[in-house]
Amino acid sequence: MRINATMRALDQDRGVVRVEDVYDTSIEDLWQACTSTERLARWIAEVTGDLRLGGEVHAVFTSTWSGQARIDSCDAPSHLLVTMEPGADDETQVEAWLTAEGSRTRLVVEERGLPVGALPAHGAGWQAHLEDLGRSLVHAGPVHEDGWSEHAPAVAWRERWSELTAAYQDAHESTTPS
Image 1 (cartoon, helix red, strand yellow):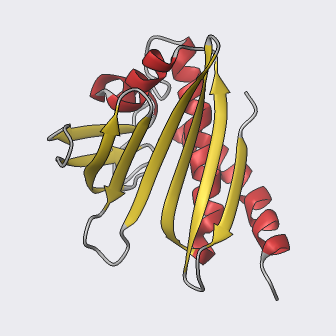
Image 2 (cartoon, helix red, strand yellow):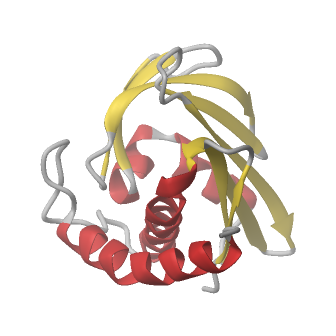
């Protein structure tokens, strides 16, 4: 597993985080891991609601982020676009592209509209999530057996996020104009 991550400003206030990795699984299996409620609950979020194009869902992530999301595009098994907190001031878009590479699959996840100052925290968070995805593909059960809620993150996710945040902060500072 070698996650490639970038952060960049879109304007003075908002930016984008992009993470990608290649997984030892088929595109169909990775698509299921990224779109079925049962598989999502194993590594990133408890999701409930109207799971169809245009549908609204509620998610509680391992990070404690909790809120509404709208499914804007769903082209199985290669593309998903979700608007987080649609209509809110802190609305973002999460877009995922899956590409078969032989028996493996490349996943690229991009979240746009994030506050520029929060890019390092989100970059570290998405890397921790993609690492959890990789573990979920190897183990049939949940990656975070201790659970999580909107008030308490998954313990191992939080520990990994804390480890990664300083490196993302350093990378952000080295690319941000003074």
